[in-house]
Length: 144
Image 1 (cartoon, rainbow, N blue to C red):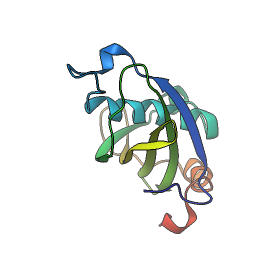
Image 2 (cartoon, rainbow, N blue to C red; image 1 turned 90 degrees about the vertical axis):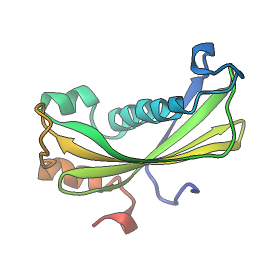
Image 3 (cartoon, one colour; image 1 turned 180 degrees about the horizontal axis):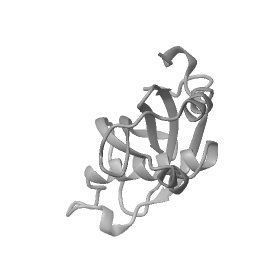
């Protein structure tokens, strides 16, 4: 997955801690999803509103699908760059995409889909004004 033209991105940097590696000194595969989670929250805060603001509105974004494609491994003390963008937003869902690189080398690509839910875990539509605002940040050819 290459970085699409016109994407509203943010690139965060993460220094891999020893606790994030396995016995071979490479980043355990489960941590890549954590890196995406952190980057998604920062993307929202930077380009829209903070996750606590969404929570105050009674909304959470639960992961409903994740596609993770591992290319190469990161290791302890590597500084990785996580680039994130919004692919699409719909009535009660959205999709984010990710690229993780280290020193310009592609390590990982991923994508997550999220349902907008309330505090009880029930699907709740994203308010129209918020959906429209987010839609302006999404990839135009993927909006439905």
